[in-house]
Image 1 (cartoon, helix red, strand yellow):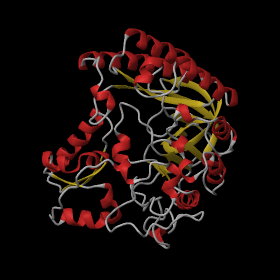
Image 2 (image 1 turned 120 degrees about the horizontal axis):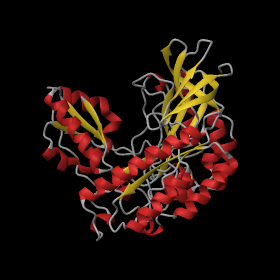
Image 3 (image 1 turned 135 degrees about the vertical axis):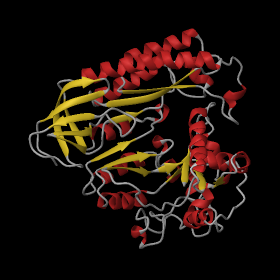
Image 4 (image 1 turned 30 degrees about the horizontal axis):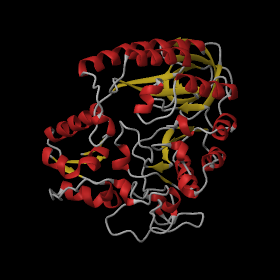
Length: 450
């Protein structure tokens, strides 16, 4: 069994370890891939001898590695390293020969991965010069096979991160920021459309940085219309935007480009300026509310989600009050509340003013309750609106489950649609919201499918 692990926060790491132990207890041969495996390497292998630990560098020959696991052949786990050191410091130098910009598989690959073709497009280097067994520093070459059906699919636009948030260890094991070139994105998007995908979810550690290493900070704005125009694609959605990097041009592109969801997944993390400075992040309550006003001037019904950390070292009652005031004013569609945990190798782990685990748990519960109430209020505000819903499942008796533009897959609410005419998964229909149930909506179809 292959377990794709997470290495971001303590709760996710523990869930990954529990899954590995459960898989081993079932008698299966187990391999651990993903961020936890990459981050700890041989140290994790010592603690979990039940699993073969794989590195990102194993992904280029993953089939052979898994065959070895099935055959009972053990390979020494890699020694963890800071993958940021594998790329030039200057983003512009990363797309030059030796800079390891992401390329794709050989031509003819669509039957195997189908995502991109060989070469880097736009005159960039072809990366056939990497040593055997070594993947590009911020992630492997893209080879793809869809393991499940469905009308939504992620499309990775970049990997790695150049930011230095004091609580986050991701850059050290994901590497420096590296964009995929537009021809690669378009080729993979076309392949996904041919596989029945109707919504593309653009993913990366920081989508607002896309193109900076290719010399064009406006590249995301430029590629969005091309992605949305691919035959078969009904909606393009962007995930993980940094408030400090959200440009007016990107706001305009996301709110005015046909087929692009006006959906803003903004990484606020807190609303107290003092805490945010300690996190080495931008902003405060007033600046964030001003940003939301600018977004809603362009698209009054735009969807907004964000995550927040409580219990950061030194967080005071005044800081929590700032966060409460922001949440109460921001009218967010989706809110995630997480408790702070010390992460190995981060600056925040050595900060004074640690909050006890019991107090962190109390703050998480308090703000999670507030978030549930505010999200339900925001959903109720949408009653009477006409929304576009992507149908994902037939529930029977003329009812269907889908998602509106402000609802991202898996992490946000859903919309239940009643329709007189039959619908199928992948249909996009206009519907009028008639009720809200917590974060979920109930709507009646009012226009034909497309």
